[in-house]
Image (cartoon, rainbow over all chains, first blue to last red; front, side, top):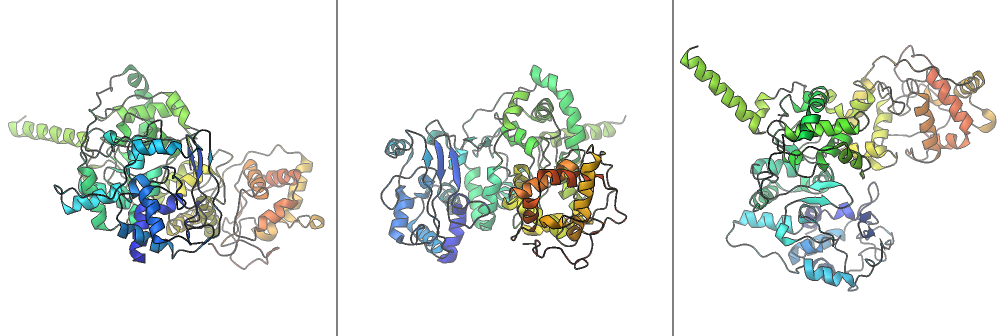
Length: 383
Length: 242
């Protein structure tokens, strides 16, 4: 049961929020900056006074299932209880059994620093009425066992929709826009659509490619970066082949609803910037991404036909050019290739030119961007 | 042109076009990318700033990595990754990389021996340079500041495995590191030997020693001194790489 609990705790990525980077796991205290103020995650190590050492399995399940703390207080939805409510009692019990075995760390919880009126938890009643449905996952009898396993993992422990469903001004996720992608508040990364939409989603990806991306962090179509690198590093790389495949099968089957974007390749701005962009591409990018943006296998992601470059929101390609990045080192890919940062070498205009070039060339149908778009992301958070 | 040749040409064009239209596994065979699968290629995210072989760059703050002892380089990579050294762009690059890979990167740069760059001549006054020379070679006994050479080697190329060389670095970089050490933004394993020393150094000491070190010529041999070849002035070094 403990081993199963460890596996499920990883699938749920508890450690990401309930640990401060570089410090002891599960002691909490990680600041989470939100548009409403800063939340500090609680200690979930088994310390009796400051952690969950005195909790019972019933209390733990109730918290995970209802989004209320042990004392009955409403939890802020930074805790993904809207997803964890879908987990089975057996699975939640296993996580609790595992958490009881990790080293107990004495570290009192830090109070949240939320602005008025968000510091009033009563407001959460309204939020919950709009965005929270309590209840365990109900299998869809029309779908395969594998599909249902994938749906359970993605919607429950995996809490994918926390980032991949657009978040509105109230910090809620609308079910009608499920998995259509959205800007992650405060982090300045865009979580792409996971629907089967061919322009932005996973429509053209094979099950193997989706599985590779989730488990190894790299695939023939692209690599993970930004917040998703953390998810693969902490969580998905440890999942079994069967579970990864099940999630891929489920994600691949999500219905698409966004209409394809029209081609903007002939915009005047693109025409103006593309000669400079082409020159920079040839000098700085082509040695890895290829003269035709074709990349090379899992080493160097292709840019031609790559959805994350053509999406309406250009923040991801701009940030990749500015900050570079290594995909996570994983069990399947412990020595990833890395993208160099160019923030120190290229001006706003040059970054705008090369990003416009890759968004509008080789049949890519993204929109041109401006030096202002680039400048706004130079100060984007790196942690 | 024969019909067959024409047909072949059209087929080739159609094939090429379909390749351009779909970024797919097919590219694995047809990629124009010729970079070898090697550690050189895998550290290209580093070499944009630190130079193709880790020789450093014209920017004051991207230091030479080449030839520094592997244990030292690994400790720095781990310190950036774990947040003991504070520089967000480095932490961001290394955040999710395993120890084994950081060791491999460290060993790669430790083994490089590119020529030393020509440093700008320091503009410091003769008095400042004299103080820098004295601190480097003799230290200041009255204030319990050991000489640089007492730990970093007589030729200042560092000591294996964990003590860095101090040559081929720009004055502004050295000064920034000594300042960061003093204020705790450049951590290492405890006890933090260098911080004890930087606490005793004044701003003028730091400016002087930085200017002097950056003015020194290329060493006869760039290799760090071997482990144990030097009785260290302080026995609180970084110890084994974590």
